[in-house]
Length: 531
Picture (cartoon, rainbow, N blue to C red):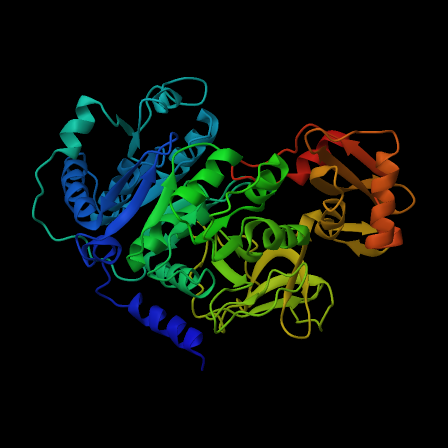
């Protein structure tokens, strides 16, 4: 047993205790003077929030929320920017044994109402900039069953300034619900995921074993905490392990991102591929004084050319990691010394300790051999850190095989003889052309190497002769020339670099790709648009 595997076992035992209390794990047991978060504003000014301050403020707010009827099992949502008030509210909610419901600040009222209604939220904490989205209107009912409190209001001052009751923080054990958040809706209506307290074991394991965050690191996970990757690994995992997290309250700007990486001495950086593509496309040279030790990517597949770009420009390769809202992260090109190996182009790495990932046949729940395309799945009995058991309301959907042996990710891919996993597509994104299975990601990775291409999405479109054919939607880099020969040039690139049969029959030049608020490309919208 390697040290990494032993650590996964240790974490499972620690977060499986019947006396597990979330406020103690995320705050109270850490030294009061240690910094919990460095909070960076848009102008790059920063304030630090210590664990002692976080405890004192969250105890006060918890007392105020209790006065509103919040208690064990209650749902409390936030529609807040990445400020100290967000962390204080999250911890206050969990201190009461209530369940935290995150809302992404880019959501419109319709998306907000869906999540508040489906979760049964009773209190929403927001701020002045987001408050209008919660006003009665077409999507928000006039008699909404939730109470809205805006930071800075008299009601907020009363709640946040309440005197602590002195009552001990809730102790719910490993199966107590901690978070209820919703999938991004890439393939259908968002589904409610109940995250139990014991899921902290897998979150901390990923932070330590895949990201390799140590006490000496400055961690910046740029993902928004309104979504799983940011919530799990920019908030919950750092707080559980007593590590400082850095939160930037600003939209994407290549210049500001370079400045934050440099000014705050970030050594461990994690972000979605969209961020790395944006930094590359900006043409802005990074500061020469970067201290990056690790760079990691998650949220959607990482094109291999970005790995090379990282080595050349960042001084460290970007390593791809794989997971889902329902799982956390389960596979990675890990940074931990016990797990680190050379990156294989196009691979999202190997299963992390605590999980066993396999590839099943398309038509049977049986494992296939090396390099055979199929369905990516988790072996439930062999994955002790797996915490997902179903969606809100006890719905299991199509996530488990009939016998319960396999968790079915809905992704297609393959594994080589050494267990390295390669993503191909979502199950419903796989292109079947004349009997050939074609994964969009493989073609996108080739097209993205062209110097004129900033972003690309590949879909299958109906064809009377072949069943489906490949079509590509391409966003050009700023300043790139869209000459008449470019579509043929891109098609030829696929012929020569990937496969002669898989080239795009049509190449569409577009201004932008449709994406979820978390940045994932919605290929089904491209298919719908063309049809």
